Image (cartoon, rainbow, N blue to C red; front, side, top):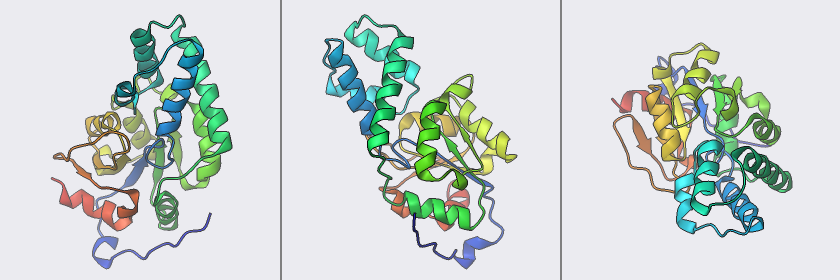
Length: 233
């Protein structure tokens, strides 16, 4: 991967309260939220059911147990949650094996965080088997650690994944900047006490007391994240 690493603004380079950056994966760094829906549609079609497009906003951004459970209940499909989870993970892995597009600005941001040695973690509701496949394309060297959805007692929208990431990095959650694309992820980050940058992918997200909303990851750099700690009270 090739990137241009911008110099930090002098007004934010020193004395920042920012200790770490915690990044969501699907829909934030990689353009895969649509992949999950496409796989869900295909799997349920094979089971003889058609998914309603309006359900897409219900299942986006959450743990597989929640989204898969909702779809089973909504369709009445004769399949267990465990069986469906296997099919969805297999379908998603096959799809990212063919193509894994990055979100605009993701490659540049990761390179900048690495260049300035900012502690960075990948925090996702996806399972470890999927995370490891994606890390191979994103560059595992960009992340000090990663937290998968099947490695915590409760995943998003609960705070557990972000609290685990902060603990693993040895930092204060209140001094972490989180970048998320869904309301579920934002809720998890805010519950953990983090500051949040929301980059909506599928559904709109409103600004809040501890979050700022941007249109694209291209608007986010290290200086922006450092400013975030003082701009939002």
